[in-house]
Image 1 (cartoon, rainbow, N blue to C red):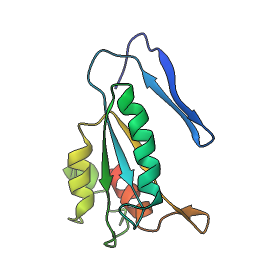
Image 2 (image 1 turned 180 degrees about the horizontal axis):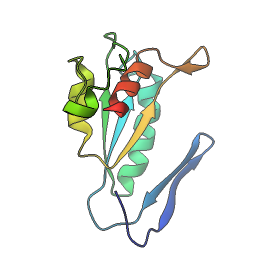
Image 3 (image 1 turned 135 degrees about the vertical axis):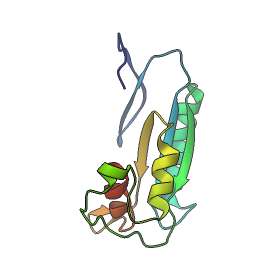
Image 4 (image 1 turned 60 degrees about the horizontal axis):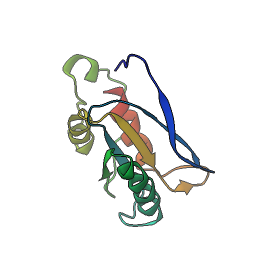
Length: 130
């Protein structure tokens, strides 16, 4: 998506990072991906905190919980490039279809042994490859 005359404004800045928002007159939607196995745990609390900051700036947000069910890894069959969705018919396809209308993504995850939660990695691999 291309924006003419881009103007960045820092609206949220803490130790964990900075969020830059493009000033525009149209409605802005962000989806927050909760990659924690605990639906209302610490990751949810952090995403909710960021969400309230963006809501105060007029940006609409929604938290999407990926759930606890296992997510199959990408098979590298490249069929998604031809048919526009993953051949593994599960919640990843549902998310990809749902997330098309959002302008930005914020991904939240607990850190497990130096990496994101185990279910989040294959979920994102497949979602972003589609």
